[in-house]
Length: 371
Image (tube, rainbow, N blue to C red; front, side, top):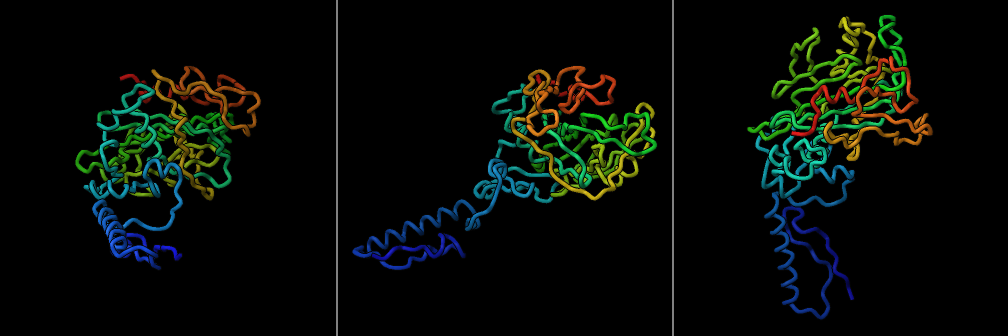
């Protein structure tokens, strides 16, 4: 007996049917006809679902790529969705997501564990999609256990708080930093807050506002609807446009100062405006982003959503890293509790330490939860 071998997949190379090698012993012409008819109908069904034949071969994708339909940071819709619901504004800022489950209306449907009206699925999807690319000093100790939160910020906008939760701040050698809390210390509660907006005309989600922590100071960043445009905001600091590794309005790039982990929208802003003295706002230039760089996107774990103040999914927890230097002490750190400064899961330090309270930061940005 000879075996049937497919030389081409249906619809490949312009939609021709599969080519069969060999013969069907003891099968009549009618059986051959019906087999070929089934193949042709399968090809036509494939073309009815999409304008292009499906690719052959195997692509390597991560679990998050599979679950979110993402590739390379930007959205890659599935074949049928992409054909039936094409991007209405392919040149607009940000990302377009086919279907209705990624619209502001769709994001009110589904499980909502933290009670803020934004579904769990949308919180995770957008936090992962817009997770910033962080540029670190090569060789810096950036050991961390990132957590995050997301909530509505108006009817068509979502605020996403990324909290790297660094174990340690290694201090600044700048002579201008003495007496301003720039010495090394355990725990470094920096953060990146993004506000993404859904444009009803383009149906794109894009970054519209951001606040980056720089120790006790916040570096504001704003964008115009379709581009990054400087704008003056408070304390004499300029709101500076991000760089976007993928596309304007997509996930941004942040520049993390050497050893100190302060966040800046551009390298030049870090080098020329880095750090301000508390209370006075005087630029100390104690932050620099001058060392060779290494880059990675901040981690967004599905189980690392801290929730909201009214429904705290994560509050006081021990380190999940068995290689943490103080892991055996099982010290807890809190993301919501009042008056609990963040010491990076090290043994509790002097309450006069300059580190901040993550709970205060979240509440300052209205992560209350209950609508």
